Structures are given as C-alpha cells and as structure tokens.
Length: 388
View 1 (cartoon, rainbow, N blue to C red):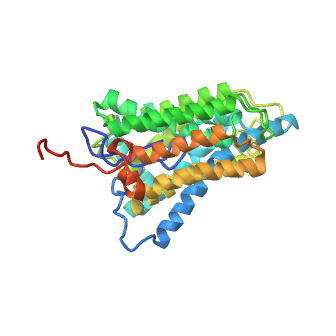
View 2 (view 1 turned 180 degrees about the vertical axis):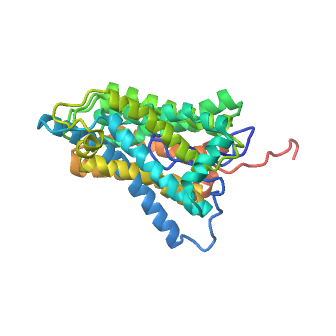
View 3 (view 1 turned 30 degrees about the horizontal axis):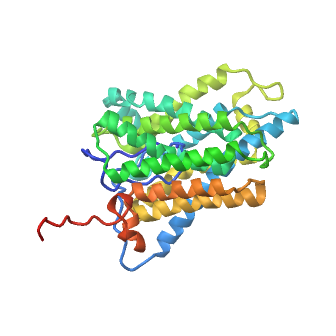
C-alpha cells in the first residue's frame, strides 16, 4: 500500500495493531476517534457482514482493476488511442481525494471546509509542511504500484502487497525503538517465506495468464519498493506528526494538495502522446478508460470503507477479509483471466494468510489453534514453578 491513522505512543508492537485491509497502496488518514470495538457477544451482526463483504470486494476490485487498467492502457496504445500515464491516473486519484476530504471535513465541522483549511494552514504552517515528505512518497508509491500492476497479475500483486506488514514492523523497530516478541518475528519469517514461495511459483510458470504484458522480476522489484515506501510513510506519520493539533481530515487535504502539486508538475512537464489532446483536463478525461476510472474511484473512496471497518469491526474480521480477498482475487483471475493456480502458489498464499492472523495474535480465538505454542498463535500459558 498505506496512509495510516495516528496512534498513541507505545514502547512495543506486541499489542493488537490494526490489520491492513488493502493493497500496498496508501489509504487516507483516519480520525483518531475511529477505534476498534470489542466484538459483540450477540454474534455476527448484519453490519459486520456488510463490512466484511465490502472489504473483500474492495480489496479484490482494487488489485484486479489496478492490473487491468494497465492492460487497458496497453490495448489503447496498440490501437493508436490516447492513454493516460500512471502519473495522470495518480493525479486524478489525488484530486478526487481532495473533494472527498473536504466533504468529510464539512460534515465534521458543520461549516465551510475551505475556510477551515486556510485558517489551519496560516495558524500551523510548519505542521502543514511536515506532510511534504509523505506526499511525495505517496506519489512515487502509487505510480510504482501501477508499474508493478503492468507487470504482475492481480493475485501476485495482492499477495506481495502484504509485504507492508514486514516493512512497517522493521521501520517501527529501527525508527521508533519498538521491540517485537517471538510470535511476531515468527509471523514475519512465515510472511517472507510465503511471499518467496509465490515468487518461485511465478518464476516457474508456463507463461499462461491474462492478455497483458508480464515482467515478473521488474514487477516484484516495484511492489517491494512500494511496500517499503508504505512502511516508512506510516512510521513517519507516527513519529513526526503524532500529537498534531490539526484535524485529520484537514491533514488529508494537505496531503492530497501536496501530492497534486508534485504529480501535476510531472504530468504537465511531460510529453503527451500524439493521440492525446494538449489540454490537461481533456487529456485526463480522454486518457482514462472505463477500467482506469473504476480503479480511481475504488482507490479514492476506499478510505471511507477502511474508516468504517476500524470503527465498527474487530481485528479478526479485518484479517479474515484480507485473507478472503486474496483467495477471491486468485479464483476470479483463474476463472476469467487465465491465471494459473499452482500448488506452490497455494502454499505461499496459505503462508501469507497464516502470518496475517499470527501477527495480529488472532489465532488463539480460532478453536484448535488455541492449543498451539504461544509463538505459533496459541494462548499464553503461565509458567509452572519448579518443584510443583
């Protein structure tokens, strides 16, 4: 992926952290009031079921449309039609995020969001400038994600996106001085092994798959960089912006504005294709095909769904939704896009899914897993004094 919400200080990452619900692409900052709630004893509510379905669909659709937006661009280029660059796609996403953040800020303050953002910018100029670093990182990250999507099929893209768990943990240790318990180190090792297995399955594939181009080494390198940037940006927010007096929806507006300035300059200074109009607005409108527009909407609006999941759901549901989405992406890609499901791919995917639950300390609530050693996800057992 992600843009992460600010959290209270901790000395360790052994507690229940939020499990990611998306790809390696960044999600908007979320209000600090949206905390995980304890699951109701009344069982699986209709709301949680709807959220689970929503996260699964959003995860799967995001990865599939990311891949097929680049396949679509390739086909448009082959037909001599105008096709937008990854930078142009990111520019439209960030513009949409500005509109979305302003609407949510207006609901929050019950007033004029533009005036509120201007007042905050004048009152806290240094705090506003702190978001330049992550804004630039998000622009680079989102464009590299599309480069990765142009070279990897959707299931591989979704699985490698989970590398952000590893990179976020490592940056937390290096920059925040946190410590990881044995269970989380085991989870990170399993995650790495699972992704390496998926990588091996792709290196030995028979060349079948969708109609798009594939350069597996390049795609894997790009998605690894995306995960690293995602992990660093998340830790940067926690280290530098913690305790900021600025509203988080205002912070999202600042982020998107700096992102638009960065990627907008890149798009305007670049050379448009001969088939494309020279007007920027016409270029953005005509250059994006239907799949690319679907990707833009899913990417820009995904933060709302994530906010709802964090507020109303629990870590088990989020981890389960991420895992189901991985399987849905694989099955849909196999049924409709010719993706080859090998035993190595399933083995690697199983390892990634297991590591998601293990890292979040969620296996102890899943029946038989409670009998495992604690570092494999079981319940902590009090040590027995010697001589007893």
